[in-house]
Image (tube, rainbow, N blue to C red; front, side, top):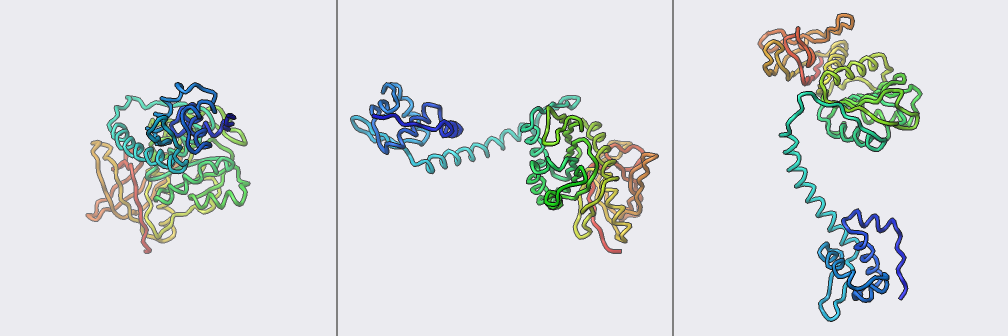
Length: 351
C-alpha cells in the first residue's frame, strides 16, 4: 500500500488547531481513505498499529474522527469544515470565558509604585503593540508616524474613530502619496510635518516611542519604549503638540456639529480657541481634581477665554458655571488653576 504524501504547511496549520504532529498526519491520511481500520492506516503511514490506538482515541475526543464499533473497528474522518468549525466555536467560547476572568484580574492587579518602561523588540511585536494601544483607546489617540508605516495601523485607527475616539495623525515627511493621505484623512485629523520620532499616545495614559534614528525608511528597527509613567507620557505629549502646532493642516478642524472629548488638554484648548474664533459659543464638561485638596470634581459651563502662553508655560481656559462661578481649568498636572482636568468634553453652539 502506497504512503500518502502530505504537505508540511497543511500539518502545521492543523497543529495550530490543537492537533499533535502525529494526530495531524493520521487525520489527513484517514481523509484519503474515507474509512479505514487501524491496520490499513498503520501500513499506509509506515507505523505499527499499536502506535495509532491512542492517537485515534484523541482524534475522536477532539471531534476530528468518528469510530464504528466492530471487529476490527472502522474509523472515518469528519469533514474538515465541520471539524475545524467545531474547534473555532469552542475557542470562541473559551475566549469569552478567559476575557471575562482575566480582565477581572487586570482590573484588580497591584501596581508597581513606579510604572515601568518596557522594551518592545521586533517589528511584528512593535506593530501589534501599536494596534493594541489604538484598539484599547477610549478617548483620544495622538500618533506621529512616517507615512510608510501608516498602513500597518490604518484599520485600527479607522475602527477607533468609528467608536468616537478623537484621532490626531501627524504624518511625515510632507510628500505623502495621494492615496496614503486620503486613507489617513478617513482615519483621523491629519497634519503633515517634518521627519520626527514615532510617538503614539492613547488616553494620556500610555505611550509608545521610537527615536527617529531607530526608524528605517521601510519599517521599524530594533526596539520601542512603552511606558505608563505620567510624567513621561506628558513629556512625549508636549513633543507631539509642539510638532503638531507647526505642521501643515490637511483636515484638522473640530466639527462644530458634534461634541468632542479629550484627555490631551492642549489639543482641547486649540480646538476651543478655533471654535471661539469662528464665532461659536463653546461649552465644556470637565472631570478632574482640585489641585489644592486633591478632591475629585466635575464642573461644566461656558468657556469665556483660552490662554496658551508658550513662554510662560500657561495653558488653560476660563469656564463660567451656571451658578456664575468662574474657574480656571488646566491639564492633569495643573497646580495654579482651580481644576486639573483629566477629561474635557466640549460642544459648540452658534452665537
